[in-house]
Picture 1 (cartoon, rainbow, N blue to C red):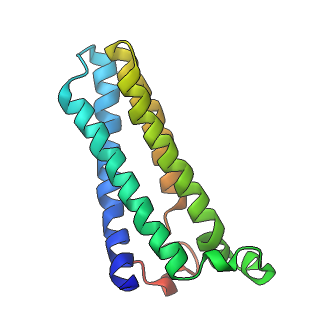
Picture 2: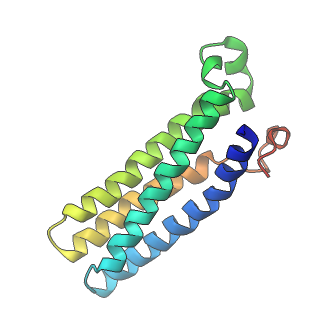
Length: 150
């Protein structure tokens, strides 16, 4: 079961990335063009946030199911770059990215005017995307090929 969740988690990351990039591009173009923040913009932000949350739930299943949480504090784990990445760095960075992506959606909903709605989405989603890109276990990272994420 964990293998299926891991494959779903690895596949869903592309959905998250596409939605984030699309939301960021639309937010920047909406902000610069002066168009109104419509229902499509609101829904795109909502779907982006939902995909982030779904990815986080799947990540929690993997984090606790594969035993990464139990390795925290172990000096051998902290000395190994790959184990440290999965037991600490990946989870903390992704959790922060989901919080910032949620802020982007929530603050945009509450903004008074359309330009500030687009600006808030653009800023918070961009920061979340940068955090996510920095913490994805890309295949070019040394030692990660053994974990079968590709």
